Length: 152
Image 1: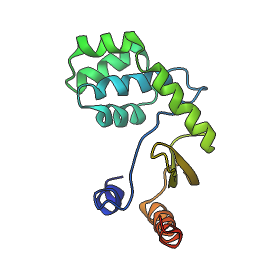
Image 2 (image 1 turned 120 degrees about the vertical axis):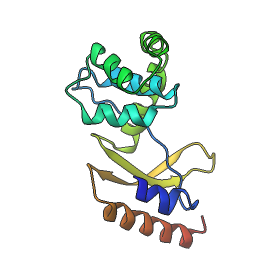
Image 3 (image 1 turned 90 degrees about the vertical axis):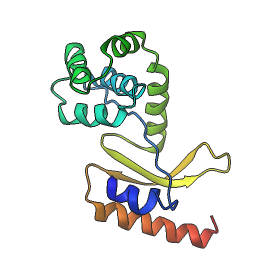
C-alpha cells in the first residue's frame, strides 16, 4: 500500500478509503474488526489491522487484549470500547457496501468513480486477493486514463 499511497494518494490522483469486511465463516472476524476500530480511537487502527491480519489464528477475545497490550494501548479504554459494540453498525454498513460492489473475500480492492453526491463510489474493477504493486498500478493507470477521457 505504501507505494500506491506515495505515487497516487499523496499526489491527489486518487482517494483511498477502507471498508471492514469480516468474513462470516470466520467466527472471530467481526470482533476483530471491532478491535481494529477501537484501536483506531487511540491512533493505532492500521497497526492493529495489520497485526490481526497477520495473526488470524489468534483472534479470541483474550488474544485481542494481548494484541492491544503489545501495541501499548490503554487497555481499559480498549476493553470498554470493545465491550460496547459501538462499531457494529458501521461494520455492518461496510459489509453491505462491499457486497453491493461484488466483494466476496478478503483482501479485495475496489477501483471506481466517486458519484456526484461525493459519498458513494461506483465500483468499476475489483482486485481480488493480495496482488503485487504492478497489478494495482496497471488498474489505476487504466482508470485514470478513462477518467481523463470522461472529463472527470
